[in-house]
Image (cartoon, rainbow, N blue to C red; front, side):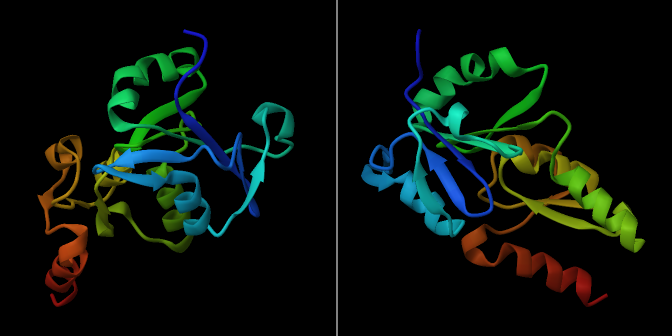
Length: 180
């Protein structure tokens, strides 16, 4: 195999770098979906086309987001991550996203850094998650809560499961704990 049928995306503070701004179409739930447009709009990034991403990157990279058809990514995840297991963490962050971050960098490490600075113990933290990239915060927090729409791996390690994102699951849990 010489290449993968994926859409790599890398961003700095201003731009989202992609190989081809017009190649972002996926089919999700039976409908065409422009993943590049979605990501750039959500992050408020200007798009910058770079046919060879490696030649264009002159800044520290903290994350590489790879998008693709969910079935394809599932079938090829091990091959995508294989050469990099000693230097990065690769994980699904949604069915159509496979994300690479520096080894040892995750949400829990960020929370721990901030909370130690302001004197909050992890036992007093409630963390919510639904995807594989939320595993570290669910394990870190005193109370790890999986959303009803979470992947099964996250539900299995959570202290509790709440309603989905679309049904006010976070508000439901917080109202219970914040009224004590």
